Image (tube, rainbow, N blue to C red; front, top):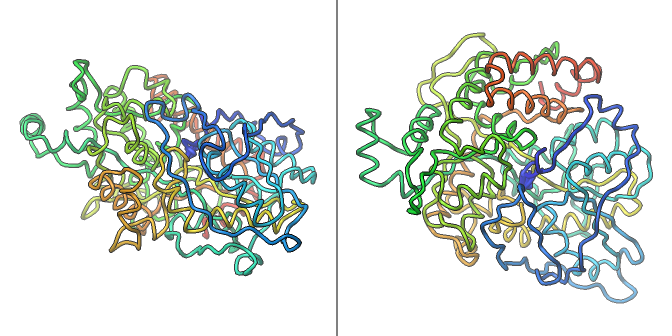
Length: 557
């Protein structure tokens, strides 16, 4: 997931999210961060896992996880057999994995007993607060201590980790029959790209983040609402295909009782708290205002000069769109964390939302008030975008819809200073197997979202609807959800994911300015102009030539 509690989660994020998580307060100068020695503030899982949920304790993280639904009891099957005494491949070795203290950490303990029985190695799991995970891992690697063999890392970290030569590619292990087999080509093209950097495999497939739109299917199909909407707006109410339509639907439903409890509810819910992942939501919303047929990549920087592009007319229009949605959300939306926002939708108190896959899966769990009524669709688009190639607005023949990988896409990376790299890859490959991933994708509480062909129903993929039904899903919800994510991840136009050194420093600067805009402290134009100045300062501190080289390489300019 995207989760990272105010910084994934899946997420959220980053996650509940895992991500799609954490209130990260990184210094602008990442170089200073790399040199800092930061103590590990972490704790261990309360008990060892035997592959069943009762072997460990699931904790809800307030503000990160949805609290109104209960975790299910679906568990992944064992994939590998125990090794024979005297023939265990990694006997006596220890693998230490650091993971954020969030929903993303829930699946790891389930692997412990199986991994140890199959390899003879022992598994130690360190759960670090979200705002310390990256710092602890990169500090350990930069000092070459090797205390951590692996991290369940956010995809945006890879620019820093590769540039610092802190993680190793697993290319040499991938086809080795000694390890559990998983297929990188099972991952849809958009999320698959995040597993690679510079043509090498670094992240072992796990979580696949991206954002979609959620809507109350029952409300939008209600004849009385349809008639009233058409009278007010002059056109039929349908699932919003554009952000203009999204605005109208949110406005129409705001203030109406949407869950029959006698209390007025809201048109939309979002997590807009500073440090609460608003920057991710802005990225997904803004994509079709900037990305188009003649401009598939320009969004963050000019690849020749590293001049920030974040203050373009398209970005400004997108932020204005976000600001104009604020009146249609709950009063506390400006201070809402991800979990708070999800709870608002899951209790039936909002007509619209846009978020990670976690929300669609959480809606199927006990306690949800929207199971069987939650529609899912790709993020809305626009009918024109501001071309950063032509420096003008370009009208489109149809709706300009852009896919996205927004979020953490939390996945395992191997430290270059691991003392047990082969055993470490074995663990990560085990987690990536089809048998495990099929279960992770249908659970809302583990932060691991869908993204592989066997997660999707025919004709898009090879998945079976029974897999979802056995986990308690509603059939109509399944079909909407999987179709929306297939369209999102297979869209030839994708939001450009930033993976360069200091990526989150840029994102944090954007997040701070977004908070000022949605609170009315700065106009959208002024907020993004200030963001561009912040971006320039970060680039100068990290080195323009270094950043330009990394940006061009990561975006394949």
